[in-house]
Image 1 (cartoon, rainbow, N blue to C red):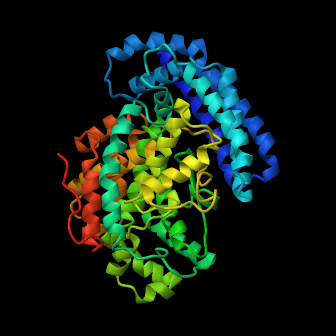
Image 2: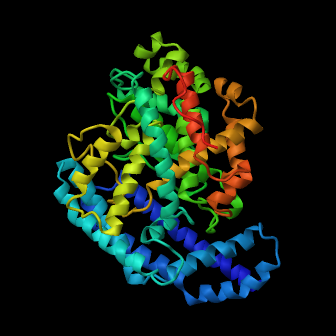
Image 3: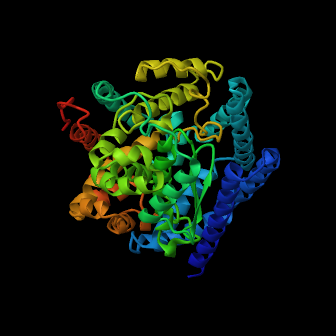
Length: 510
């Protein structure tokens, strides 16, 4: 069918342009000299114009119109039928946004990211504030493109939908209401049993950390032929194709947990990309179902696997081999307790999994206030500090430990943060499903055999790419709708098992 061939050609060009954008972004955060920021912003703007023109081309609309009657009579789960549906959605959303605005948003984000880096270095929020003002101005113009469509009930829904299709402000508000109600007393009870200081006390030379990271990642599935690991200020993962996966981490000599768990976290992202079906390569199906699904994979490897008792059994000898010292006297039960302690901390990416969603609740609260106009950019640092004290009971001693700690707002990614919590909830439900289907998974992890994990995730999540949205993917993998209770039950069960709670702290929700 000529129209189908034409659609695939257009999908190929869009996918390749996105891959080029991914390479530019990776380079910006790893290799690019600071002086290249202006030119890189221009390149992002030019690329966004081309990509937006591809998505909004009336010719794409005509091809979709011609194919939709055919698609209605075919298997709804076939790749080609799903490709028609995905490109229809992308096309309809893109045509509402002028190319000039899309390009301006890309340009502003590139400049703002550089301003954020410089502001962190100078510990000066005022250096970043004008860039954030510009980001918000353009976000409001973007939201206005969807006025009167009836598609979105709240302005913030437009932004959420870019990262997790179908997610709404009302749903996120409800989720965080339950989570805050349950987590604040759980954090309080568990933190009282914890110890002060870092998860891994002591000094760990970077060379030793790098040797450990190589052994860790090699065991779980890192493929040096198709993957690479580099340092960055803010750890992230990016793939240019399923055969080209880029991870980053941060090496801190006095904080081993930073590289240890960021490597596992970013590996989860990378594995998702690497295990997408090769048949989707160079199409718009070779993408995540949503960032909630993407975060479910990183959080699953970081926490549900990486902080489990079987994992401690396996990884402790690896830690002893490469880092020695503190680990020579530890038993697996000691490590299990240490890495699951609840410590009130200021930094999101250093937060334990029990307090983590309170960090996300804070960011959601502030983003929503900014979008609704209840909070100004000038007042954001004070609002951040107040929310940190209210939710975590902590004072914020510096801008770097407060409002400037995350790259997301500097990169123009407003609406992204709630997907971390969606990912945590999905991860707990997927873990339940995985354990039911692979009953000897604990033994496999203890033995350092992570293949059964990778295979289950490939078959149930990764290979599908964007064929199904996050909700449908979760239903297909577990038979369940998104729910808070499995995650809360998992947290409490682990804290009890590790001796960090002496008695249940909550009443299970139905």
